[in-house]
Amino acid sequence: MNTPLWQLKKQMSEIGHRIWLKGFCAGNEGNHSVRISEDRVLCTPTGLSKGFLDPEEMCIVDMDGTQVEPNSMGRKRTSEVLVHLAIYKKRSDVNAVIHSHPPHATAFAIARIPLPEGVHPEAEVFLGKVKTAPYATPSKPELSESIMPLIGPETNTVLMGNHGSVSFSTDLTDTFYKLEILDAYCRLLILTRQVGAVNILNQSQMTELLEVKKSFGLPDERLACAADGCIGSENQPFLATFGVTPATATCDCDGGDVKRPGGPEFEAMVQTITNQILASQK
Image (cartoon, rainbow, N blue to C red):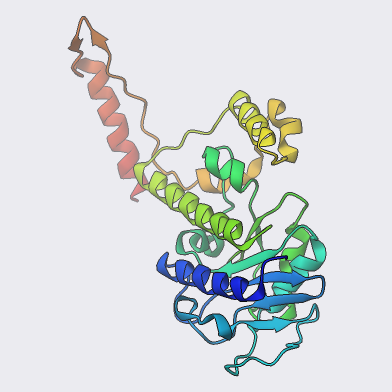
């Protein structure tokens, strides 16, 4: 909050352009903000593309959402700033919020499929557990009310049912990183679904990973139960989307020569996979 205001406005404009370039928002979708003092927040204007924002178009509001300084370009603050303010009020350590519609992550929010845990190390370390809020109408007070119960001391990202995502952190750049990692993870999950198999990290691997996360200064409450299995039933909806689970095939080397698949066992495996594929298409 010691950064000059003009520099924060410039950063807000640049981050908006990055969001637009990544395809996380279309038209005038999305909004982001930065806390500039105990009772003032700098936020994006309403009705404008995040890809073409001028620094002087940023708006300043108080903690009730009232625009407290005239905008030199006549812009009005985003209609969804109340979501940002609710997060700032709940978490004093949060200084930046980004609400966007990253397509791969929003697909999970629309499908109401919880993001699985114990799949990808980067997602576990930098996002942690990501929950999905029930649907609430955009720009209405119910929108912020829908996500508040899901925000704990370690939360940095929440999916909004049928809507998009909201990410938050200590500064705007790190908040953008959270958004970027979120959509990249969801894209990997969708690609994995197309490949047709997923491997979940076991208890030992999760424990070790969460210990590494802790060493980075990123606590995770799941570490306390990781050795006993910290991955719960939330993974089941995603795993249930895998209709075909082929038997595992190996190809070993013997004296430098690759063993070619063949014989009755191979034919039986091929038949099993064929039957699974046909069954999944009915």
